[in-house]
Length: 165
Image (cartoon, rainbow, N blue to C red; front, side):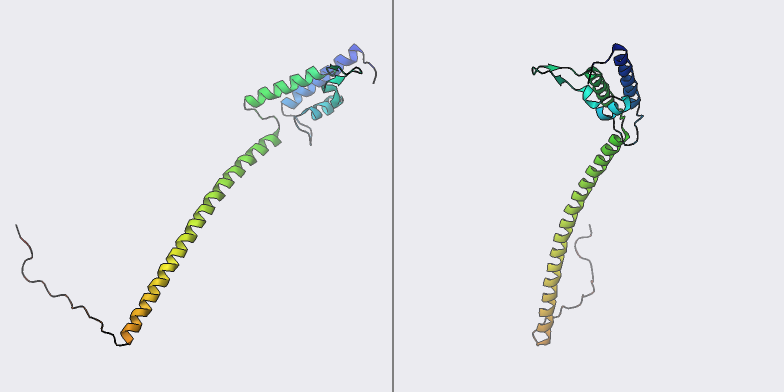
């Protein structure tokens, strides 16, 4: 690619700045994100213009619009730090991550509760089985003619019990 004139460069830079402002206001194209690829597409420049280049001797030089890419990323970072979410998909992702985290916590609590209830059920069934075996043993002993002591009925209380003072 050949060199571009100063006029063309300034037009492209103005186009990129305009695209930066639109993207940072949240005016994203359908299917676009708030990133350098979308910025390049919106400004009508190649994405590689935002990255450093290598000379033939191996030295590195800045890309023609790298300073604008740095400005875009700096402004985007400032917006994020201020709590402004430019990309609605990013906000949705963050919201879904929070929902997912709360659901995972809820699931862990429910699994713990289910385990405790299973233990309680097993204990209750064991006690019921033991009580059933005791009842069967007592019935068998009664039917076999074993001596079963009957308890006397209560006598009516006459007089006072204990001191009345």
